[in-house]
Length: 494
Image (cartoon, rainbow, N blue to C red; front, side, top):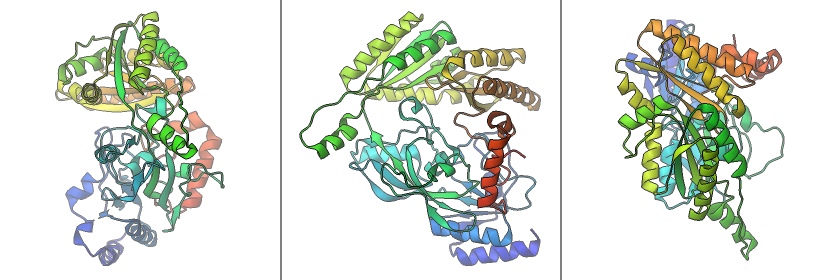
């Protein structure tokens, strides 16, 4: 873009956004809004940062971007790992459309309908806190990193620890989205009925598209009953034993309970909101000895952790159901060499223990001062998870690198947090990540279970999906965004 065109564009933006705080060309802002929270990728500064407060604001930005052929990069909480939000060095100027102020609810969550209509900048954990404070016995079950927003979660196709019980963003948890297309047109993908067989499921077209097809400004999301929860912790002699125990426990733990109530309507409401089908194992998390050491040294829950391959189960349901499930899991764990089984039932203790699990990576950074962490994930069929973990441990050891290994063993999703101190070690880390991804794909898995593709993994898509599938993705992109203005350079292989 020429200097004259940039000046004309900025003047039109000033006319469209009368609040001077809506626009920024400050060097610090241009740099900050082009970075992720994670240091493994760096971005080039944007040309302009625009803070939007509504769908109409986004339309203004998109139409001016189209007029002046300026790329648009959506931004909310930047909790993404694979560099989905950064600007590219090859782009001479770009908008950063910062939607972190889209934090309102278009509709008060209703118990009867079990959904919430919210803007893209709503943070998932704050939404759940709000529901709890209002006495609404529902919650949004996707649980990625703390601080992730609804818009970013949908665009990335996220999941989290609860996927064993509730599935991922690509399931039925997102009923519809409102999106601004590259033409400036606003669409809503469907109405909010629980079921819909009318035409294509266009909602899923935008889930996992990483902001390359449209900018999500609002979504209707399904809420689930908030049930009493407890956590079990059990250690195992090795990963193979832990995986076998989890698989057998899950295959035997899908009990569903119902109760007769006179009124049909009240029965449906009560069963869905209060009782709920009780697939009582909510999640099963595998962590290794190094992960446990970080929790042990820097966690706040007073427990005597065993530094070994460990599984954390989360159970939901009535006290009786959770106790029955716990006995089943303990028996199955014992069968595969599990030891030190504990069942934590008090709500405040459960919250504290689970918080320690989520914060373990920060403890790890304290254990290795001066180091940074390279985060990545892959996913394989559950039966292949031990093969992947053993292979990854070998790759790490052969390069003298350190990483806690863990993941959502209930669905085969596996994460690394590889420590490095300098560029030389970062190069070795990238070798490990490449070997890890190649192994996952060879095991009929995927290069990413929940972190997304962005820049970091787009080179693996052809091998995983095939030329035909990737060509179809590119054709859809070219049809919807012929000028390639929405988040260019991401997702699609070069």
